[in-house]
Image (cartoon, rainbow, N blue to C red; front, side, top):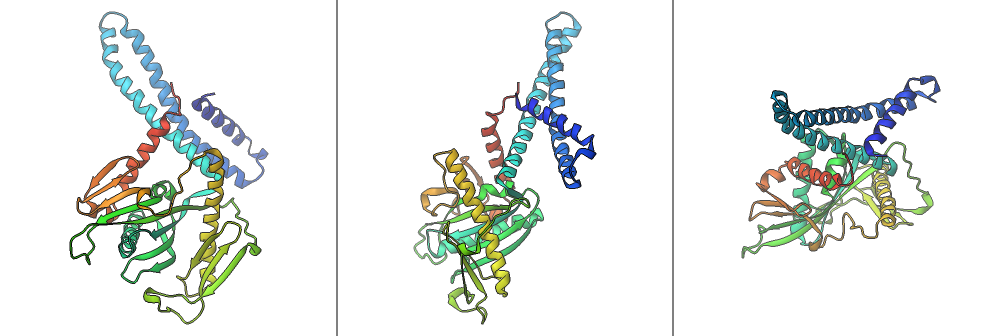
Length: 363
């Protein structure tokens, strides 16, 4: 059964079920089925348009084989119909890909509307910390422009400025589907302000984008598997920022995952923040194990922040940003660092869709 036949059949089955609401267990299930039908309906409408164009194209081809004025008109119409068919095919494939992604996220138990991002300085010392701050500012502006909500969970400021690491939580419709492309190692090439000889420095910063569990997914954590340490929160230079042991560090013994939070004055709030980070990391840990079974080779998202594991380079001297996954560059670096990421994300989405097109057969 083709994808189109599968979708049409599923749409018919859901529609039939909704015709008999008395047979649906509860109002929540009814709501879920209604939402599913609405999503399927968008794809089915596009399928109907595509099949209508296919029918018109066939009819015009038959007419074009004849003689006379009608045949000439049919020949003129053929090119326009072929173009419409190809455009509808692209749109249809895109909708199917988006639907497959939603199904995959549902199976994995992740939310597309809530993520935890972690930015961590890698190779390059102070320059890496400064660039961590630049990336955080870039994402903050992008998030503000989108109207998404953000909250810092943990930050470790560097003495010179920027961050050794910063972790923050984001909420917004479809946020993971935009930000997932940011996960990996970001490389910066520039002359530091303290560099008197004008020598270019290369530094790296790693970014992790972790989707949070959805409402239905329960991450069960046995309290006995946790080691919880409290300590006094500190700022740049090591000075303490409050007088109580409010900062929290949690170690999950089975996986070795360590998370911390010191951004809040309340120990309970810091513990809550740390548990949010831990649940997202454990979910990512589970997904990684599943994927490792499915594929022998999988590159880790955050890696070890080595210079060779780069996904993107920000070259200040050439005023250029290059994404190495799609081998595409954009000029006006300042504009990108001011939060204008949409053109880069769109290009990455289109490249991913094009790569997936091959697995979807539409005649």
